[in-house]
Length: 300
Image 1 (tube, one colour):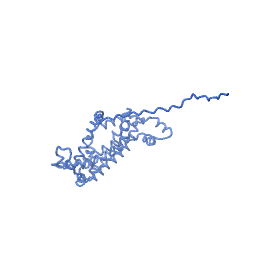
Image 2 (tube, one colour; image 1 turned 60 degrees about the vertical axis):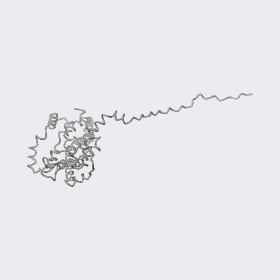
Image 3 (cartoon, rainbow, N blue to C red; image 1 turned 90 degrees about the horizontal axis):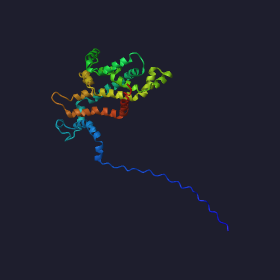
Image 4 (cartoon, rainbow, N blue to C red; image 1 turned 180 degrees about the horizontal axis):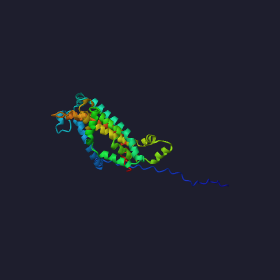
């Protein structure tokens, strides 16, 4: 008899499947624990939001109720927003404000970017002295130059219009030049050297190299200038107070104040119209604004 050969058993083990990742169960924290962990942030947010909420609630009250100690309207009056347009020429005030803020912002950027580039990236005698002059202009109160500037614009017959506020932005703004100069210092000089080697002049280097890389700083500067012009009361009151056709929204809000009383419900309703465009602009440009501000001042 012949023995049957049994096949040799394989010593290879079957592949072991990889262990499944253990999912950690997230502990559901209660609302009290959440409030305790974020108590400081909640308190600060309430401090900042309380004035806006107070203005919004007051805008729906009657004039008599707005003078009481009640913070919540007993009866809602959305017709206050319609009364704002009936009693004042609010569309014209908004248009004048957009014109002042828009042109002022564009002219400021056009004039401040080359000046900041010259102070940050060009080597010339007296650069540090000129930068010191810019800082001194930032510290100079605007009331000091009010009388000579008003006499100048009155000589040219431009008082009563917004041009005395718009035309000076063609010559730059000290704060905008300072902010842009500080941001441009963070741009490496190697990019400029490479552009100059390729044959780019200073103007082409500015607009082809510096401008795209300095967009966050330019956006932050533009928003600062836009907010300043939008909220400006002193300048329009000084030059356009005698001409109601050129009033801005800040003067339009002040028109609700009479000699013996103030219609606070209408004042707050008009204030909501003034705040809304600023909040919308900041909401869509907050990323560039924060980036431009945080990167400014990395170098001295």
